[in-house]
Image 1 (cartoon, one colour):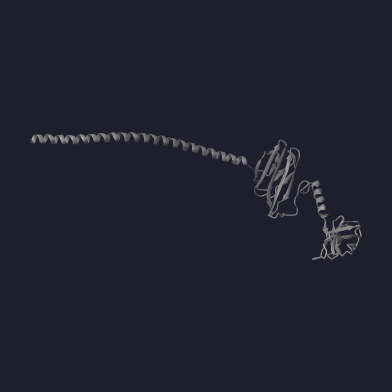
Image 2: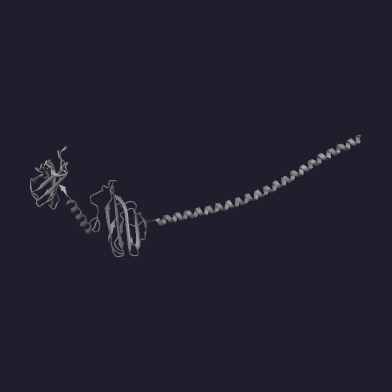
Length: 316
């Protein structure tokens, strides 16, 4: 019996060992799978790192290219000119920074002309803009300041000619000019003689506009003279009158120099006994007119209106 018990004990131990071995085998298989997965992940990470390195290298190249492009763009946008004399015809379209620290001059007249303009505010830099429209035509301008006044200088240049103009710019938002001397130019003045004649004509026309003369009166029977600088005078007269049997002759205090142009009239009583519905000015002349006043009564018939009325007359 004792031997049988020993054998059974060995069998039990063998079964437990076999279970442990099976579990170990499973764990080993799982470990192998994990190791294989880890190897795959490591390989993927290596690939990602290599891609990242490539991307970083590409980015560095792009940044270097961008820096070069920016530097080139700066050079293309603004060109520095350090000489004291600049000839417009020597330069294509562009923006130029005049950096000569002294008196600067611009040759503005043709390819070989000796005519120059002295740049205001000689000390310091000035930005000059040039537009080349064709092989033989340029326009240009610059803005600068001198003694607290801002100036715009502009002009054109061909291969054989040119001109320029300089004008003071407004010093405040209300458009007040910094100086009454608007320009000093090669053709004497801000504008051509034709433009000046046009402005002078406009000035005369504005001065010839009608205005109230000093010899007008505001009396109850008065007048206003509207005059211009050429001596033409339009006069407005007014007054009051009360008709008799619907009629009255009105004589002006003084005669028009020519015939009366027009007369209008209306009743002025606050509560008239009759209603003035019709006013007619007849026989208008330089000395006066005849007024006819009537209304329609309750019977529907036309009757005289003998109410006080005011009148206005226009003439020269």
